Image 1 (cartoon, helix red, strand yellow):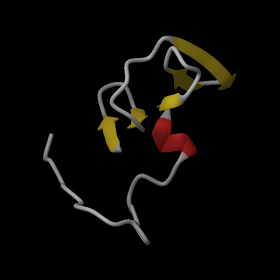
Image 2: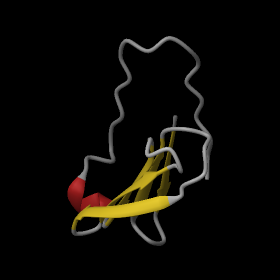
Image 3: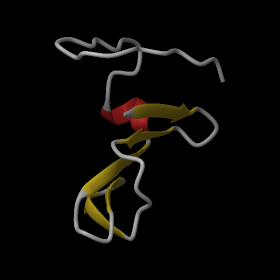
Image 4: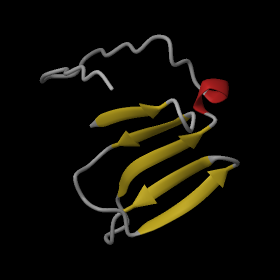
Length: 72
């Protein structure tokens, strides 16, 4: 899973899987769910993210694996 914030467009993309998106559905204004060809959720796109989610803090609990931070 990857989280990518783009300050120039104030959008947050949550990449849930490696599969490419085949279909997108806007579930509310500025929130789009991306699905692969099998109908599995693979990503979430949030426009105007700074107004919709708390971007100042990310808490990760209960996950096994590595947490990486990449500067943009």
